[in-house]
Length: 356
Image (cartoon, rainbow, N blue to C red; front, side, top):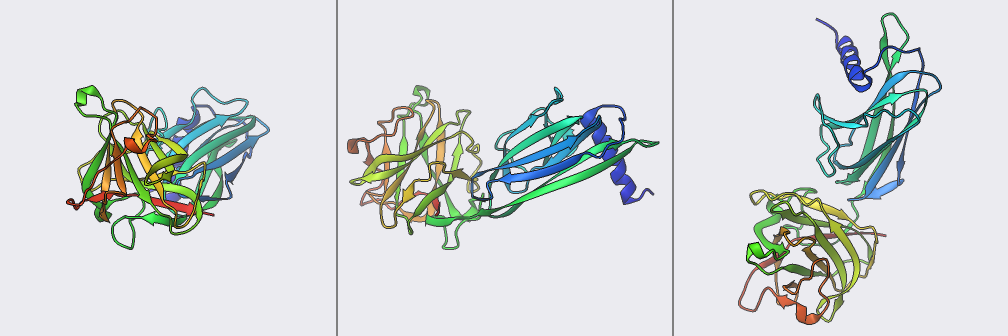
């Protein structure tokens, strides 16, 4: 029975042939280094890992880089003097896919990049952080050595970043313990409210929803956590953070266009999407603000799931049918209360995170 070491060498050889598809080359010792930016991050933020591989002489090689756990792929770039036509690909198990898929779960996925030396090649992998803690990325450069028979050798590099969870400035996710990152489960009600573009075929007016919140501390917005899912193929929605205008949404502090909400699944299970803030507006403690979601496409149809514990009132949960596509309704007369004194309903669920 072959040893574990022998099995690894055999696997590496097969994988390298798949990566480079070339013949043995002269013996070299390529180098690999990795850096990460920023130095520290927060939930939902894009993290950039830059992998640099270099060899002064001719050698065929390939880079394997597992996408870090609890992140989502955003993009990859592959540049250098001899970058092959076959760019980096994503591999799940043993079956390479034609292209990386933005927003796809990273667990069990890796990036493969063929390398043709001599020269210096840079691979830039961008992922989005889904959970707090240390995120570590490790890449391996496999290359052919001059030997009889040819042997596959490797060198590796890694880099880490600490992802801060931020402080929940507001949350109505279920019990006081909060909701596990990325899952709704018992923290969210199976009931939902619609955000639609008012496609005439749907025989419904357009709907934009707004929920007020008051931060528990004065910090800058870092992320918004939403149990929101999409029905149909139109997956573009506008998420606004606004100031208050005498009890209705007012001045827009930030607009985020979201195109990666998950497709609807049977309740009560729905994914919580973490939306990073880039404008980082300041949110003052004790001051009312609004979270507003509207359609970015006439055919858009989304479900914003309700909290299991936050009761709606006539002043904290509003809707607007005066929706103009991609425009946030600003007039007080554009808004109507969803709840009234005779109703006992829970309003939409969300969490607002902040950092200094």
